[in-house]
Length: 487
Image 1 (cartoon, helix red, strand yellow):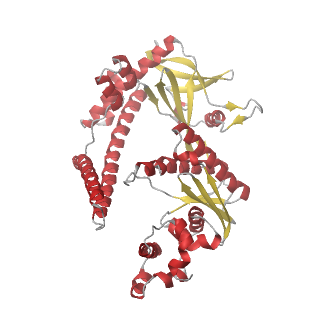
Image 2 (tube, helix red, strand yellow; image 1 turned 45 degrees about the vertical axis):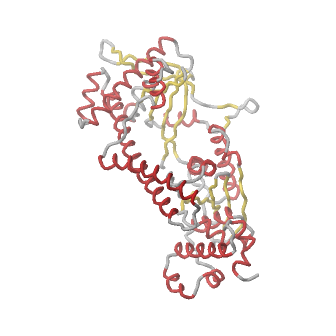
Image 3 (tube, one colour; image 1 turned 30 degrees about the horizontal axis):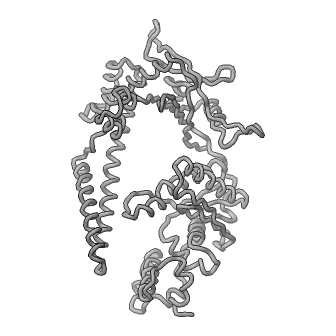
């Protein structure tokens, strides 16, 4: 049976002054070793040799030294990936603005604003392209750049700045060493402890170990006594009983010490499959459009799960709403005993949109919803299919919305579910006859399915422009017959 990784957020409870000083010292040494490893790797020093140097220089065991070197390597790799990402995003933004400026009917004021924005985007593109060509990246500030600026302005003390730079200790797991040799979770008389291997040595040259109480999250209902939400504590205990390795990262935040424990969680056997029916899921900034179809691709019903707060509430509340929305969606699949299909979206910040639209269509919401949906389906035994998202909304709008009385989101969900079964979407005869000019017939027929729907969308936009109206899904449903000339 396959498994997935889960991160549980635990906290050290009531550490003594001596224990706090011990953890702070370990974080200081680890942070210093991390920054040293980062610099040496940039200079080209081999990782194998560097691990031994770090172990001797900072009096770490070889595993602690490897963790520091590996953490530095991951930081460097992520910075290189960010440079590539920013280059690609700004290149697309520049191309989009150049295309908009070619539009002849722009007002002088709009053209001036777009030209100014284009100049800013080109400067950003030039900035990131220089790093990409040189195979480098901008300077990395350990402790965050914002805090460094505050320190330079004298807004925080030297000690506070040091705390921000050295607030982390990291230990990878090892199955052969009982899970995690340096930060081990143990149980004594039903109480959980974190066993920390310190830098001090015994006479036998063994690390001195210190036990600190740790709270593993488990919310018990005051009314029923049952666990509310996921029982992370029990899932982690099950992982320990299987002898799995787990990763622990100690973090210091506002004087408290948190432990992020990442462990392997077994996937639930798939119970609800798409052998009879499937629910398509269209992800939107304010909720899910759900449409059920049969194995033959026929419509069987729809609903829309709405959460308007996703577009404006604070981040922690938004996470909670995302969880509730995903729970309700997967419950629909369980009640109907069917599988689910969702779009396989790729998230890039490569669009220039207004501030209000940017918040409403935040990629954070899309990514969070889809990630939570996938994880809950794995846990609940619901089969989830991922399909390509191209033209799902356009096909649903122009082909199915008027037929079944759907809005654009549920129309898209219908297409997603059908695509999950592998059905293609041919252009309907009515749209073909009314929208495609005779001189374009041959070229239109030779196009791929998505190219045909792209052409249909262009022809619909032309009809709206002739009427001096803006093409919106709602207006298309109202004006459909007039635009097609069948009223």
